[in-house]
Length: 269
Image (cartoon, rainbow, N blue to C red; front, side, top):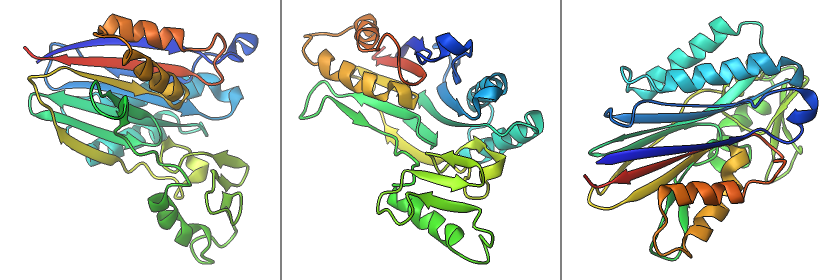
């Protein structure tokens, strides 16, 4: 199997006026190494902590690509411990997803809402989203959180609550002065234990006799990837560079959020 990678990053438009930098980060090992690992982290926090948030996200992305620790639960515990130690005074956090590819298939671990998509050249849909977002509206996450949010013993001071309160599809968790749109992340000390860093994991086989194209992206790049994959269906044969060009074409001049997209192509040897 041959692997090739292309990356596309764009800071959200407002950053050009504040002097801040993108709080997304990505990392991957050599395309010649097996297993191949790539990760994207999306930092979030107070704008005044932009430098710390960027550093935290970079640490998460880099550590998730450690090829020596393949147990995802143990790896996420180590990442969280490193964040707590290296960013002890920082209130920021980061969500992240890692994809590991070898000759036998691929494994995806997700903490938050960084997404992995796969292009589907044939069939009814143009793409499939492989990851499942850890959002307050996710029924599994809501079931996990409700005993904590509404229980007088686990949440005696009302530190955590769904927002909008009582909504059948809540969009945020509020805690003290914080509000967050995800239910799992690294960091975010003020939101624990409502937020956890336990990963969701998906393992699937990979037919090494056919071509596969994946896109690993922060939430700011999700709509861009989806539009690019739909547009790619109109081309008889879309090279990885053409996929990158489509991604660039569909990126707004001033994105509303930081955009990080890692395109990964797997070809038969």
